[in-house]
Amino acid sequence: MSNSSSITHFLLLAFADTRELQLLHFWLFLGIYLAALLGNGLIIITIACDHGLHTPMCFFLLNLSVLDLGSISTSLPKSMANSLWDTRAISYAGCAVQLFLVAFLIVAEYCLLTVMAYDRYVAICKPLHYGTLLGTRACVHMAAAAWASGFLNAVLHTANTFSLPLCQGNAVDQFFCEIPQILKLSCSQSYIRDFAVLVANVYLVLGCFVFIVLSYVQIFRAVLRIPSQQGRHKVFATCLPHLAVVSLVISTGIFASLKPTSISSPSLNLVVAVLYSVVPPAVNPLIYSMRNKEIKESISKVISWMFVNSEKLSSTLHK
Image (tube, rainbow, N blue to C red):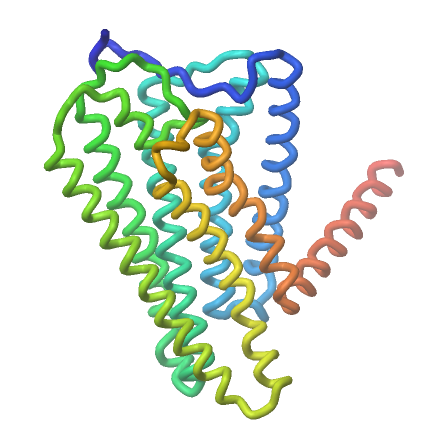
């Protein structure tokens, strides 16, 4: 038995025991990580450089890509390093920082998706007031509120989790430091404090979910009132990327939170964690770039520009 004052490090869950599978995990996650870096990086560069994309929707999309980069960079690199060097250890401070960043970035992304639902609602249901309701200052304030909500949530959860005495060892049944897995190591019976944190979290998540649902109910009603089928398809197509990303984030998050304890196992927890922490940041850029014509065209221009300039630089160096 040990307590939190004597714990200097935690042991993360390994993806595999054999050296071959560890290296396979490293290369697989490296490919996913590089794809996420490339996709989100291209979206950030494209929106920042193309003045035609300086719209509220693209501003929120840029924030989403930054959050995705931060989210996947919090969990994957340490797991890949552990597989490469055949270790499971993460320092106590490193675990606390990782837990804080995971809680911060995931909640901030969820709140930002709620703000993006409001953006789509105003654009479709109140187009004449779009410039007024979603001016530059309003967009900055809403994005800042999403980031601040994630930060406050992370401070609350991290302080609550690491203030509890830990006496159930230091082995974490997850490939990164996750709140439920750290709480399993606690020997404290602080039900009131845990319940208060749970209630605050439920209010935030449920409030965002209800707001997104109500926004899309109004959007669907407005789309159905459009007389032409082509017009309905064109307007609704602008919502599809956001709707797809929201569905992906909510479905994986709900399954991770509400899966029955009877079917819970380290392997299943591992798969579920990959679904909600790795898949969305890697897939989100693909969804937006494939469904948004303007972003797709701008990304193509950026890629072409990069190729042209790399060729010019290469020819200059050869001379």
